[in-house]
Image (cartoon, rainbow, N blue to C red; front, side):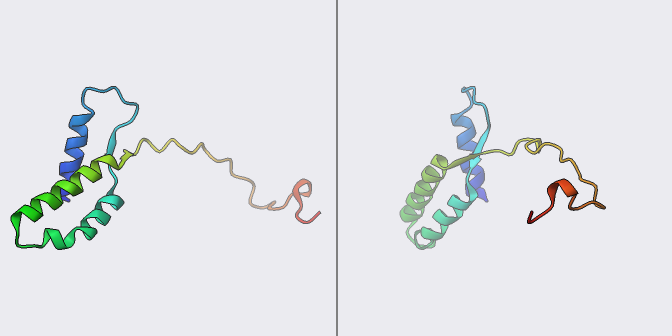
Length: 95
């Protein structure tokens, strides 16, 4: 999760002076996939390989963004039908 926080922080700094409609964050699914692919480099004994892998992961993760969740006003209020009359005569099935 430290990588996600670092990537999110860099994205926020990048978009700080812009007037965007939405705020963005790093796509977690892409980030986990990148970490999984670069796991041998991250576990290696060579510190240069680790730094390169982390840098590569963060750069790719910053280009794969999703918007932050907004309020849950996406779905309008549903009108609930009368449960006692499930199939009214005007909407009979099969006719």
